[in-house]
Image 1: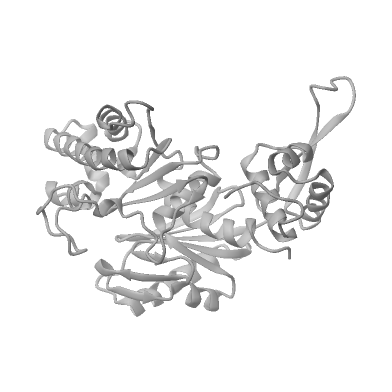
Image 2: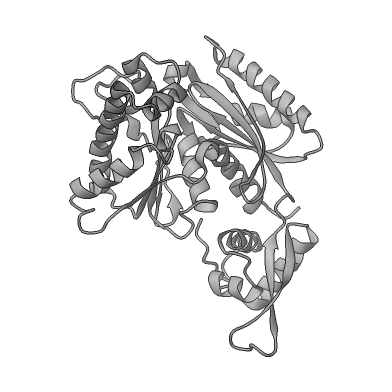
Length: 386
């Protein structure tokens, strides 16, 4: 999401996208501030802003005196019209699906979730998902959906809009966006769910001004998404970011991916539940708060395992910041604080420049805001004028 434009070499479409994304990144900027930030001419900014106001995407919100001319000329401030476009977010986890309607600024207006159907094959899941989406949209029929964003588990091919495979789900070459878009008659976009979360942190979270950061999500598995040089990183075809399948224990537990000793077999929600023989992560959190020794011990052990792998990662990619999402990252849980301590004391590079490690401020909505961010960036903020 680079925000440097060139007046003569970039297209009108790109300049429009740059202006919209700058309005999101800056807090109520003026036309002059947008021109300075994007390197576009004041005349170009004026024309684009006028078009965006006519489309109902941008509004003038008043004025303020500039420091240079305190007694005279005032600067008009601008803002996005938050509910001018609404998107449907679909977050597909291994254990459940979350749906939400989200605004231009990443605010969740309505949301719901439901468990994955047991033993459903690819076609059965698709029918189930369409039925659930139809019901959700029907409940909020007065809300117009501009496009749909899907964040999914598995290997996701963003460019071709398909899930290459999700072995543990039994999915292969799943053309989900094509089917969803044709059924609901709006554009649909898909990416790996944790890359979507990284995008959400860049667009709406605490990483707006960070060029290099990692987002890690601890759920039934463990995944990650990464920004490098202010760009969301995707390797060709597979997308990358499978930190949960980095080896923690060589020749260790067999993983569904075919490898042994993968981190998520030791430190994910699924691994912790299996180790303690519990049925829900909420139960684990409650027991931790009640001082259960076995639970405290297991959470501490998982924290150390994640820290070992993350330390190796930081030695390869010395990012500025790491954001961690998932229920285990709640403020009264020790996981994030302990990971920050361990990584910054173990990493060769972090000893020289500390890495910030924080929980996501999007809390339980990080998955749906991530899915929404995929739709918002590619279907609204980078879309051509209507």
